[in-house]
Image (cartoon, rainbow, N blue to C red; front, side, top):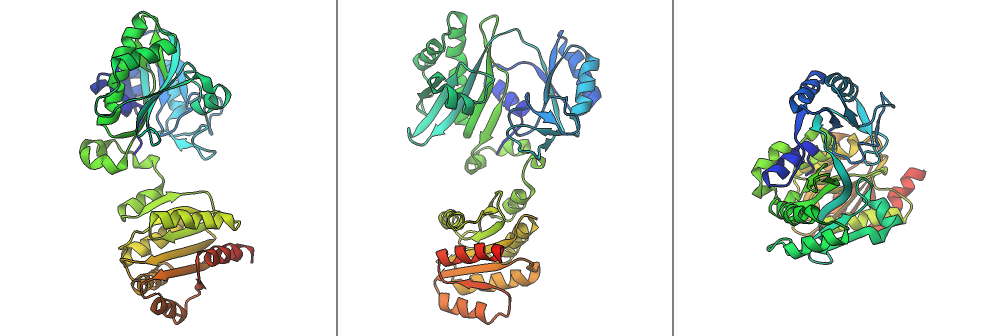
Length: 395
């Protein structure tokens, strides 16, 4: 689950991680009032969407307007907020469709001496969380990794013990920090790592992490993603979810107990089992097609779930064919076909449908399909299914 920058900073502050003072605004007048309330000579008006690169992003309706703007008066704050709110911001991470801005964060200015990059992720190879830092703050880390990989520092730490003071010092010295900045890093970095672990994050990123003229480390940004599997431990995080920022099909699937991820292709996939779903997508690509989604209905899907799965797949205007790939283990193949045929009639198919079945009662299930009278293309194995569904797009 992703959250907005301002929400991440609110959580940072509770964890003792230093952030600038800021105020949420949802109207231009609220943005102006926030500037006045902050009381400084400058402030920063920030668009709030679930994507990075906002400072370099531009609005579709206002190409000259950046997603993040430094302002020097309440009137400037109001005018910039007016150009941002309700409009679509396009960044390197949103894709060309962009995201609509519904919330603004007005933040007090800082006297910045230096910018760094900071993130914590789970490193599967190391089997632990790892701190990633770079002297290239404000720059996309992917670009740094490609152009100057030697500038990226990594420091694994024990999830139970946290980042130790000597590790924080080592990172600070490697980044060329000295004096007060090193002392600040010894406090800031362990707190940030503790927040990551205790909040069950899958990623926490600050870009840029700034060093003020006074030598203090401050999180000028906050990009936080939580592990969905751990949300039962954080009931209070549920109120942070912004459904308007999420794909509508993924939201529908979640409510129906389905695992769905929207992709860019035109072949819809309905599969039971995550591993089988991955294999199905690989085979589709191998034979020249592009999957439109990852959709795992699980081992115990009922008629309602299968119907909703088809409805979600067919609601995607890019889907031109559908491949159903089922292995009947816990749920028998004939039970799945019963649900499939019911869903077929309920939803109404206008695109080719290829079905591959294997497992318990598969012969009974195949006969049910053959005798159904529906326009369903049967496949004998996974390769045959992938070839047939791709062929329907070339017919």
